[in-house]
Image 1 (cartoon, rainbow, N blue to C red):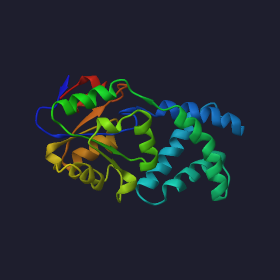
Image 2 (cartoon, rainbow, N blue to C red):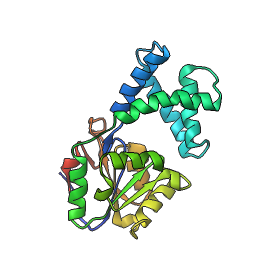
Image 3 (tube, rainbow, N blue to C red):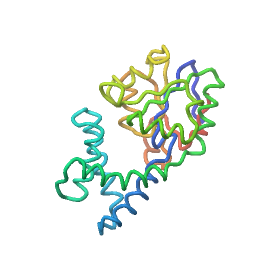
Image 4 (cartoon, helix red, strand yellow):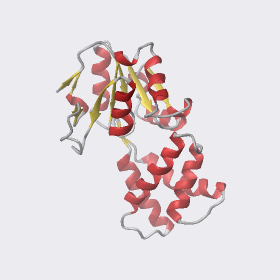
Length: 224
């Protein structure tokens, strides 16, 4: 069990740490692609690769949040679309994706253990605030946290230091008094370490179990 041994604020990532969004995304794109007549047996992996590339452009503020959605549609379809048509087409995916959101069963217990130990809980997410608030509302998470910091509210998302500064300062803590818990090795773990925070990688699939870094396969393994 990974223990948090000193007083600190606990900063959780949201997607793939507290919420299972990848399963929702895979199921949504398979059904949506079928409706669009896309005969790609590997469409979920293709969509994930496309999405990651354009979402990274949004995090670098090269394009807007809505533009990254449009670019994902255009690349998947392999053709140009006017902005309004691209947005309408994306909606077919989005409705399916949002209906498939699920919370990991270890999420709320972990947040409650942290707060019961006197550690304020912040969610730091690279998502858009409007969408992320819908997730918190769906699963009644707002009452389980002390603050929410979304990359849409700040100049840059994780792993940029700006994001970690926003999260740690939200409740008056410094980086050395804060712990980042997230599923991305580069965005959550290494980004936090580079900023001067401690970090624990959430490695549910065991993809990084051979790395010499603090990690857990379940949030149940965190002892606050």
